[in-house]
Length: 380
Image (cartoon, rainbow, N blue to C red; front, side, top):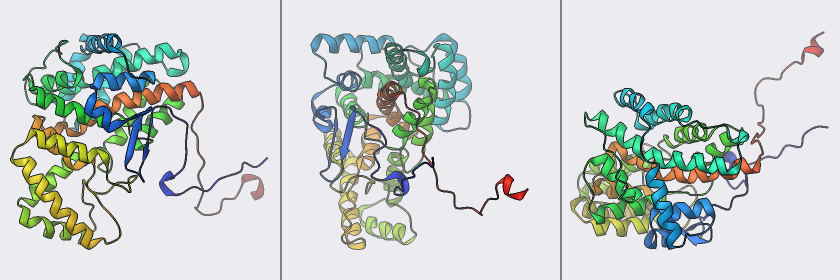
């Protein structure tokens, strides 16, 4: 019986590939949620660990559960001794931070005794993915510091997850305002529908591979500038513009050259990106010259884009203010996309567990458009 093939749009746009209870995006209304909860409301009112609990358990924790979960996560941040030599070697390589992280995680899977998700039950998958997500920020912080010839900082169990990550990266205990700013960014980026990296993680998990394999694959997708690389590029654009009066001409030049304006427009949102509005508020709370400059440049870019692309709204997206927030909070620019990875790993891990429970291999078909083949039996 010949398999019935289904034509789908390029990029799988609008195609439902799986069921999920983790979250979803309504691009027409400018809304996204984790479970039953509006994600921007969570970022305003909850801690990172509480939202982490939500995407794992499908509900928000009570006070006792929140304290216990925060303590559990803190206990899993310490880097295993056997990984330290690997991190030291990788930190000194001429490679991107995400490439270094992928190499370390490939070894970490063995050190931590991870099993293929197909060979273990749900409880073991949840335990392994929790440990993995808790460990990622410590590994990234150590890679960053060693690359700068600075000693790694031991995780402080008294600090919340975002604050601990900032402390381990910079070596300085962050102010409550800086810690909360990064925490809110991280909450907003835990999950965002079936984006490229999340879908990649689910494809690999569907093969039965171990959680680190799936996260490494997702990191490869996140490394692309059209996905996770945009925050630093948006900040690079601000540097290139230099002054507010040059913004309009800069946009015209980029558009004439056929280049994307990083930080504006989105593949899913037709309404304004709700993450951008909240991150602008976060940036304003942090304050400073960079924030004031970004706000002024954003206004000029929006006016110019409306002039050049009438009828096609291109509002600012999460990446425009993400870099502003992270730099103002003290993170080096090389850690912008890695910080995205810290939070998104939590979402990937939830999807890995969900996909493993579905026990269905993701294996689409393709349409062959090359020269006509000749089957062997026809040439006899």
